Length: 588
Image (cartoon, rainbow, N blue to C red):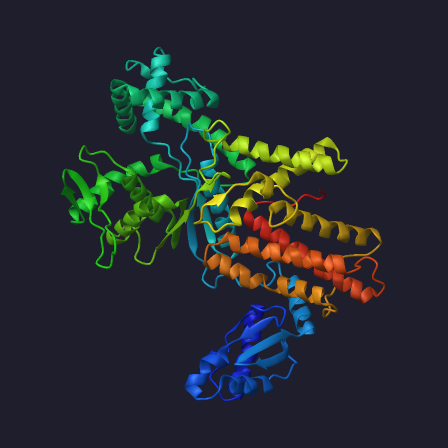
């Protein structure tokens, strides 16, 4: 189904051609003066020089060709040469009725669906999730849903940090605390215990204790590095401990991500890429891509057009150890072998941009990925407190994600129970749903690359550009539709008619923009575009609601039209919040 903007443009193109001008001048945009018109075209201004005519003359000739029978009801030429457009209410109503028949409201899916892999999440095992993990999870989940909605084959991969120095630290600290465990007995040949020798709570205490101790004691640090080396080279007891760490940690991570309504298709990590490293390194040497530089093995990735220094991509350190560059390249080898993606999107902190420039260039230069494989870096900014600094607890530490979710949920619970009498169980369930909207919308309504202030008071407000406001609007629509049905009516035979008021038409025009918004959000990987749209749509609905007696309307055909418009608005809003990763309750 064509976008409403394209249909208006096509009609104006025909008018330009009939008036004797090239149709390329008929570029239609949303009006920047909605008090004067709904859409506008400045093509006459652009054509003045080519056709040696005053732009107002061109505009007037074009306007004269518009009949008013199609998508455009009124066209006006305004000096010095603007063309102001107002749409035909019946045409817009017909367009919305067609949208309502389609599961995706007329959105055109990819004609050539792509296989896309999205790398997001990226937590380290054996550590609790903290607020620093929030943006990657929320943005990545939304990008996954948007790209999938547009018809692509999409896989989300958490890409765990599960193979580095932190594993050596945990093993070393565990050996210090429980030296008699069979994992540390080289003579042990039996089956290791199925039950892990620690809980997730133990791990979350062991790692920071070991990390802090290693910074103060060089011999302990060396011991942890040696344990890391032995783990990575297959020491049996250490691999068994690693398996325990993974099982305990992943179970806890799955629980925490489920609370965020974030789902990964793959739970792979750095460890999965290790087996690809030796062959990859050997090939880079054999084919002349890699060379030694001060003992380290590197691949040059600078280009002539660079305006700043891009260092070589380091494949192995001088001591032969692998790095993040190595692991990320080997992960691309694995992804190419197993999934053959057309595009890989990385949702990571924007401060890692240089690292990914090096990795992407190296992967392309060396043929690790195909020439036409698109590698996309989506860097996000920092989530800050009201002081403008990275978000912390009151004590100044990094806040655990589950604590942030609890704080927001508790605040929503207070608001829900303060304002109305509601059963405790329902209040708790609603508070969790609305709290999630506050967190996710508060994040996603900002452009991903920008830092933003996490303002709990503002994000949990039921007024303004917030998640709770969007949900309150959806619940209000549900309530009206439920009352309509309670009055003995059905929602099945509604048909939207031409708007009878300015507020009704404004709501209809907002609903009609859905296809354009989705296309833009998809092309730009920009969930904030969806947030801006549903805020405008919610505002348009609330204005219409306050100015219109929907359930008291005596003209049944007109009332059915109102109900049809409300149904479509509800469905579009529900679809959009699902793409953002949250849902609406039945009542608030």
